[in-house]
Length: 370
Image (cartoon, rainbow, N blue to C red):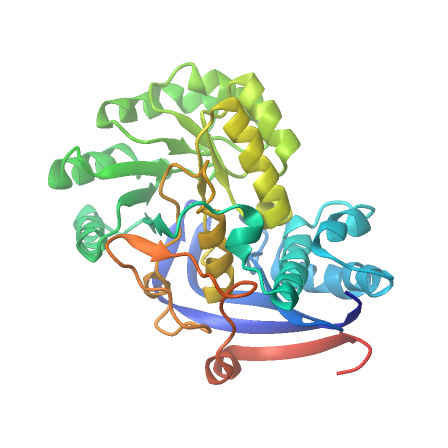
């Protein structure tokens, strides 16, 4: 393909309710969409960076800037373009994985649409439907938490993830276990809120038979996670620490990750996410697909990824209604705790014109043409 140009589109999507984690509270998502136009087709990508550099060093304004000034011009200059070439073309520019992932996703979508192939087929999906978990933010009270968890279980979610932080960990988990029983698949996510000195406290979660504790320590402390893993019965899962197949292999070798959460935006794209999946499968390490409150575009790609064989744990591939009253694509609706993997060309979904226009705050065209 030959790249004609790229549209950067900012949208703001209000959340159905505030979503609180150890690093802050979100009431809406400021999302940067990337529309790639080629001589054969167009494709869509979604950048998962947040408004502020709290989850990672990337944030929406910075991703828009690096795309505009460096990444898009590099692709425009390429004589021939396909998704597998994007990583090599952009390699000289250090970091900015979320920006690169959005651009690669859009190129891959365009390429697959032109060839009539789906994301799932391209990535290696082996399932037509994927089981869905839900992430439950930090609440103002335990009764409010129990009401929320009960509602999600009633909707059919097959796994519950509780966000935790110091002061909101053992007692909320205990309350959920006591109310809903040991059969509920339950895990916790700390988003780097603890240190190794908290090991004895975190061990108090062991009796609750959790699937995993996700990213308890800061992202660069891989050795600390290995030390912590030896002090807990609960399996340690890494999120923020995993930024590539290389980092995943190192963490597994060190004993820092019994389970890996794969977020394509965090690792630079869906092709690198597939490589991480392959590394983990070879090492016998289960993986699951994390979420970043994506719109229907990113959700479609995540569902396709979650259908790969190594994704043996339910991911954060919730239905659209978990976060948004109105999505920019046909909404993903839970069916008996599962979502169906799109089978149409590319992502299998496209933005709905009216819904997209209603949430758009700005657009910018980069490249020639229109």
